[in-house]
Every structure is written in C-alpha cells, then in structure tokens.
Length: 454
Image (cartoon, rainbow, N blue to C red; front, side, top):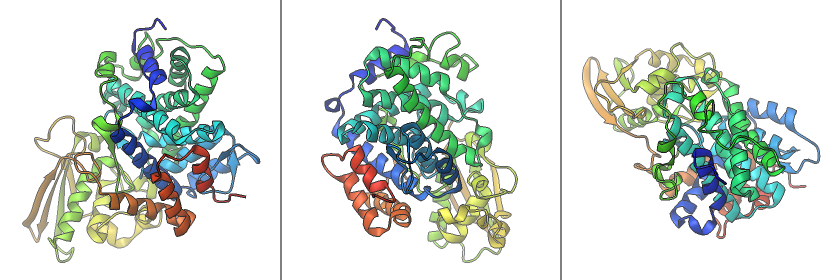
C-alpha cells in the first residue's frame, strides 16, 4: 500500500495484528467483554426489537445462530438480529475514546462471520482487538463534536470497527482491509434522535451487519478510496463539521498501546444511559448507609455534566425505553429499590405512582465547577426535611477501569442476564466455555447460544 494516511495506517495495523502481539491482559479483557456482551444479548433475545428483527431476518437453514432463539439466519442478518439483542437493554459496555458501545456491534459481527468460516477462539480475540482499536481511534479523531452533531457513535464508529474486526477475521491484506474500512465509512449512520426507541438497538445491529457486509465485499474485490476516512469529503470531515477532526490524534501511539486496555472497556451495572451511572452509584450508596428513613420530606439534588444534560429526557418518559434517559425517574428507582434492573424499564413500570411521586422530589441541574470533558462526573446532595444529610461527588461509575467490578460481580451480571434465556445449567456451562483455555471457537459458542441445538 502507498497510503500513509489514517485509512492506510489503521488498515495496516489490522492486517498485521497477530495473536502473539496481544498481551495476556488484553486477551483477558476481550474474554470479559465478550461474556458481558453475550449475557446482555441473551437478556435482550426476546425483547420486541429483537423479535421483530428475527421475524424479518430469519432464514430457514441459515448458516448462523440467533442467540437465545430457535431461528437461524444468514450471516449478515444474524449479525443484525444479535446486535439488536446486545443493545436492547443498554446493558452493554462502553468506551471513552469511542464515546459509545464497542462490543454491541463488534461481537455480533465476529461471532456470525466466525460461525460461517469456523473461526478459532484465538481468531475471535484478535478480531475483537482490531475492531475496538479502529472504533476507538476513529472516535479520538472525531472527538465529542461527532456526537454533539446528533450521530449515534455506536452505529457510526461501530460500523467501521466491526468492518475492521471482520477484515481481520477473514485475513484480508492491508489493501483489502482499507477497502473494507472505506465501504464501512460509506455505510455508517445512526441518529441520536432515535434514542429512547427501538431504533437505537437497531442501529447497533445495523453496525454489526454492515461491518460483515463491508469486509465480505472487500474480500470479494470491491474497491473504494484508500483515504475514505481522512480524505476530502471523507468520514472525518463529514462527521465532524467544525474543523476539530484530527487524523494525527487518532493515530497517536498506534501499535504502542491497545484501546481495549487504554482507556479500556467500561462495564455497566444498570440498563440506562451510562452518563448517569456515577450518580446512581451515589444514590445507592446513600440509601445503603441509611441516609433517609423514609421518602417523606426527602429531596435529592443532582448535579450532572453537560453531556448528560444534552442526552437526558426532559419530559416524563412515555415508556421504558425513554425512561433509560430520564434522570429523575432513574434516581427515584434507585432511591426506592436500591438498584436498577431490566424490570424497572418496562412501559408498565414507568407509570408506578410511588416512583413518579419520588421523581418529583429530584432536582437536576448542571454541575458547578465540574471538570471539563468528563461526562460521567456527578454530584449528589440529599436533604431530609430541609437539612443536608449527604453530599458526595463521583468522577466515574463502578465498572470503569478505575473502579473495576470484581469477578463475582461480572459473573452475577452474566447469570442474571443469561439464566432466564437458557436456564441455569446451560447459562453456567456457557460461562465456563467463555472462560475456558484455550478460548473456544465461534461454532462452539454458537451451539451454546442456540435455544435449540437440533
């Protein structure tokens, strides 16, 4: 290749990535991220968005598994349906460079394609690292301006990341990988206006599907510009309109560190917008400390970041999906129940009188003197009958690399998600398979994820 720019550099990195280049710490993180994604996807396997996708995409005799469901489908359709399931409850991991969810598009793409081509566990790990590297670095290149313009980063950046992962899985050379990235750049889309609806999960599924398609088309000989990401009227310029895009920033340190470790994967405890999780952590902590005896006379004052202010719902949610972005509702749920679960974000749950009454006692304002650039930063002040009884600030949520979950917490989350879909015995067997050494193959995982193995 003779392309020295962003597209060529990322393509060369992906094409040259080998299992022996990946540190053991990164391999362990990939296993953890894949298990987390699959658990969340099994919880979402029978949600309405997944059911609709499966009903449209299922193909009798298809080559690929629909996770936690009896149907099968073709490879790109399976990636779409499983991607919808992975993002259905918003339980899937996030990433700070990407400012979105890396595993929801990448894992469905590589497991569907991996099942088709009989990829080994080692192949899957390498492909995942490649996909997150590209999505994260491209996120650095467009910075937060991309999201501010209304783009859904999980879908836009995730499409290119999934294509990179699939190109690595297919063993494409640097030239063909560059074409795969270029095709994915043409396919990328996804709108924040669709947050709070089924289309948000669909956009993650579309990213997975298009990643598969882009890599397969490139493998088949489809040609694009080799500067599709950084060129005039390319991805960076069109998806970041104010001149702040920076290909050099995206490439800084390429090959010296891996995005799966630095800044690393952020795991979610709650099925809500990740930007409110530090706040929810503090509400749960205050409740567990017995800060209030009852909710009479209780006032919860929440200081939030500018990023959360831009993302949050401003009117009472019409249903469970919209409630995932409503700070007052989410705070009230945590204050009443000490946690947040999938069951708290159904259409019926939103209209519980007790939750709505407490939500009216929650005040939300922009935080004062918050550090710039940290969308997670939050402050909680609790008053009981007008007297301050609790005050705390928190920079990052539980599950962030700086505040990691324990192995027991990861396992508990996985089983909570997977047992209802597979049953306790099969869910535990799947977890053991995901933790096995050497890493298990795509087809072994597919058999364990299928609702019926006939």
